[in-house]
Length: 148
Image 1: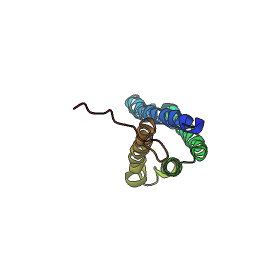
Image 2: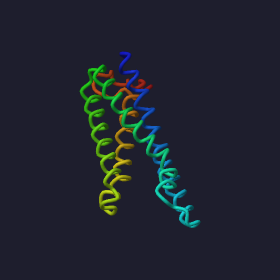
Image 3: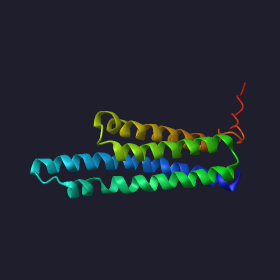
Image 4: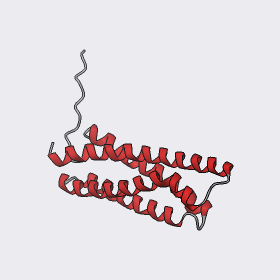
């Protein structure tokens, strides 16, 4: 296995875990903001404070997918490259949905978390396939012989 394939495997796993943490930060931000509503203290600054970790990690995940794309070119694996390109495209859409979600909350805003789960599914399945060595160019995992 090439060094790039090994790096790719670990990096996509880290990104998958980061997306899970990102979803956690979204929930924490939502409930923190809801708690502030009860106290009547919600303003733009307190909203930003509640969602700051979610926003910051989101941009780091986007940068991480760009690194994944670069690693995928080093693997010379068509499937890895296509999956990395798909991740970058989905992250660009995610950022655009975040920027425009307030304009049409029940469409664009609602699609933001749906897209997050699509991103999680793509990265999670890519990580799984990389660890199981089932992406193109990898040797198939051999089954143990069955005793008669």
